[in-house]
Length: 305
Image 1: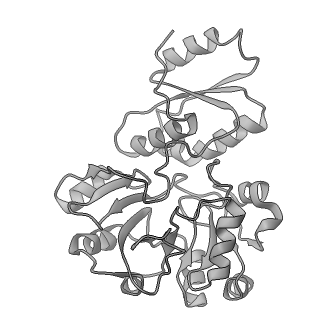
Image 2: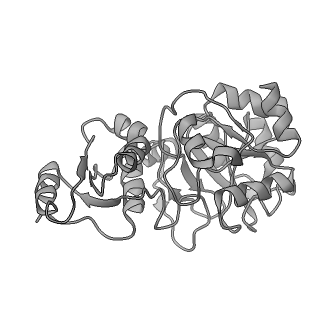
């Protein structure tokens, strides 16, 4: 803990564990460290970072004019995989927010990282600890594989429990919008708020909104059922030597937890084509579908052959 605090306090980067994925962390008040995040990841500077705080009281230091429904959600879902997009305060620089007047904020459900923020005395800005656009890391080994010596410290707190990134809800617009499905199903959020949240429109303004993201090296092909997957595997036999089917639709929490490990393992095993079965577009399945669709690129699911 002390080493992590020292590194962050002196402008270094620390890979931090969370319940969603591992993050590449820097103190939000250190411009040099923030610049390092973008350089290490190869991340576009207009792509905003998520700010991690340790308690709800800190929300007032990074955001202003906070909608009462955002506060309601925060109390119901934090710590946990929910990110709120709010109007930024002057304490958060434009370098963190991608040049925008909004800031994405959450409290991670990880005791080490919460205590790290407290001991540091500053919120931590942290995108996923991997190269931009590639598969997110859910273990310390994934971070090591991706970033190696480009990060000063990797904190190993075991595998991430949820395995997909946080749900992002934009409260800088009225009515609020869902920017990214994630670890908390939108149905749960709507139940808390008592009204329907519509999907975002307009330009990308938060992490994970690009069409192509979370991509392994192998080709990812999408189908709707296991029978379609089996048929497609047979039809690809003449084109690819190594084809694998990914289907955990009977256990969505496990599908989410292992999704990025499965994508990475496919590359490690030199799989050429990974056929992924999409779960239903509801609950946690919506987040899994989102990640798989972006891993495959912008093309639609393939029909059965």
